[in-house]
Amino acid sequence: MSLTKEIQKRRTFAIIAHPDAGKTTLTEKLLLFGGAIQTAGAVKSNKIDTATKSDWMEIEKQRGISVATSVMGFEYQGIKINLLDTPGHQDFAEDTYRTLTAVDSVIMVIDCVKGVEIQTEKLMEVCRMRNTPVICFINKLDREGRDPYELLDEVEEKLNIQVRPLSWPIGMGKSFKGVYNLYDKKLNLFSPSQRKLSDAREEFENLDDQKLDGIIGKSYADQLREDVELIEGVYTDFDTKEYLEGKVAPVFFGSAVNNFGVNEMLDTFIRIAPTPKSRQTEDREVKPEESKFSGFVFKIHANMDPNHRNRIAFLRICSGTFQRNKPYNHVRGPKPLRFSNVTQFMAQDREMVDEAFPGDIVGLFDTGNLKIGDTLTEGEDMTFKGIPSFSPEIFKEVINKDAMKTKQLEKGLKQLMEEGVAQYFTYEMGARKVVGTVGQLQFEVIQFRLKNEYNASVEFAPMNLYKACWISSTDKKKLDEFVRSKSRHIAQDKDGKLVFMAESKSWLQMVQDNYPEIDFHFTSEF
Image (cartoon, rainbow, N blue to C red; front, side, top):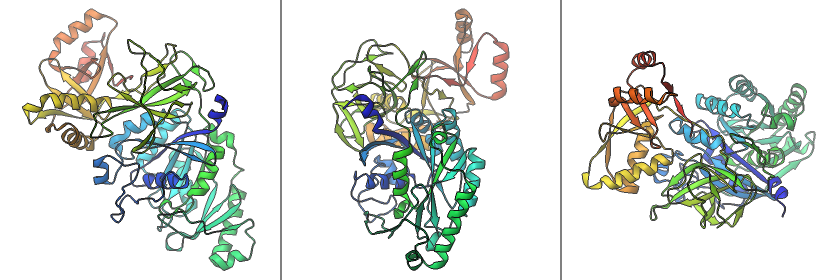
């Protein structure tokens, strides 16, 4: 099959949302429709012994939240879909931001009871930076939520994007009957089923069909006819071009847990969502149709299988064809790398692949050569524009509770930090190790994983720090002088870059005024 055909067949997207909006449940239902799994395990149900496919880390099953981005691929109606389920919890926002660099479009899940929440607004800003096309899925209509028109207004206002409903709910809460597909002008009535897909559905080509009154009742049928007329009158026709430019967000309503509305969205998604797009490097734009392979690493995960110490680097393919066992230029590294173990994912189930195409996400088994942001190419030296790491907000010192396990601790910290779980600083003056994170929960995750995966016990002692600032200067002599005079406050990050650890805002301001030749940065480009 030609490269162009393979590219046309692919859709790569992420599901993003505030915690608890039903992201992981929606992921499951999409996999169910794609035939990738046979029964769905509701995340919080104890009746089923299989926890959600996409939450496979031990701590995720205990907490019922997603901590790391999972990658899943499946085929649906001849289209290859690559789906990334991201953590919604704001403590893991950096993982989500990085994931958004690796996808071509986004499905944003909104809870119909709570509406647009703060984390949703932040994620939308990141999508705006790249004009990523967004589809909204308003979820949980099986609960008594807010008025659909009110929700649409809120999305427009808070997320600063025009909306166009492409499906419409009939009733809500206990009286929720189903969803009318405005894009195809079709009505499918399902019987709600949580676990299996049922084929028992009634199809109506025309809303004036009297049979409809008999099935959902005359008042619901009349209300639906009225709503549809109003929507078609108020909103202009849906324009795919405007959606692809990130100007209009199509909106779907449904209940992921009951399988309502998910199919309507998926059927429309594969028709309107973008195929793999061009990517910007520091020097030029790389088009997916180029014959030479290129791609970048946007995530690293250690110990996906606790019995084998392995690291997997997630690579997004940007152009050409990636082939197993072929040596590729590792732009940052000293020598070309070849990968004999290349997988594609279905959550924790993986299969070996021999080749992959633009838009695909593959897992490369790696012994420690790759870092987040690395570029692999077929010869050319270029670097894809990455995401910087931001200065953390909470700092704690690592205290080793078992001196016999120092080596395990060092190794565990190094691997977890390379995954981008948190940031790691070591002070010059001694062996003080400091971990910086965006949120409190990450410390628990680190402590849990160090104990479970590396058998190292640690405690974290709070530190009174305001910001970590990466420092640079055009005058090397002045920089050396500054590092000497402030040696007690200078640390190195995991890449060996110099970082000034400021204890308060006013003190940082004073130091900046006293040393005008030194540049202080709050982000470090990966």
